[in-house]
Image (tube, rainbow, N blue to C red; front, side):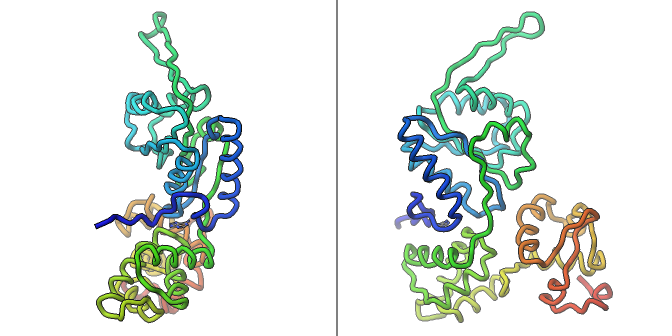
Length: 323
Ligand code: ADE
């Protein structure tokens, strides 16, 4: 069977993040007019908001090939040099999780970004000689969950820096409908609205949950997604009315029951939960902060009053319950 991509391939198909789309449309049109490569682009923001999708779109719109790699995959300078020397004029290189690139690799990237060159150093000490190898002109697209994780010299070499934020409800509804059409499943307006409401402002979650809801509609329903289908299917997924998942609930209940509502340090919370700190900081916390279920203070994370309410936990006897 044909593999269906839910990912938009052009800026015209891209829904949401209007300031980013407009900045890119202008920069891409100008670069093409001047027959120059696009300035290097850095995207930051929580996972699932379209950083990789935008890299694909940039390559498409610029008419270049896309090479995809990631910070952790580039272990040695040679790994990056191998990629850079095979890049063709006008190509796009996408480095995901660019903040996890080793420092030694990062240093090869500076002249590549600035002068489209790699500097090889032969020998050491007084015999050290360096040789400059010219590269084809390319556009680097970097992605990171948090801009603050990047070193200043790396960050300064990007010409376009954009932060991706959670999508507006109206945009998520449009994305839901577009994806449903591509997946050849009917969905009514209340169904699309309910799915969007439960997808934490995140297109990747919309598209994942849509597939589970489609399964449910085709097996237990009449083949069309309604609000009731979404409610029943997502109850099975453990996704509640606010899009809160099992991991979110464990995180919140740890703060509430184990740390008496907080403030609790992130290292302490992750140790109690036995989850990676990075997962909590990059995946779990941004949305909980956004909808106000937690607050962050200098002394740690606190569960807000709405968190207690949402979980139906009484604030006065919270710490005497089991997690
Ligand atoms: N699918 C995932 N993200 C999308 C977006 N921003 N626009 C359209 N379709 C999408």
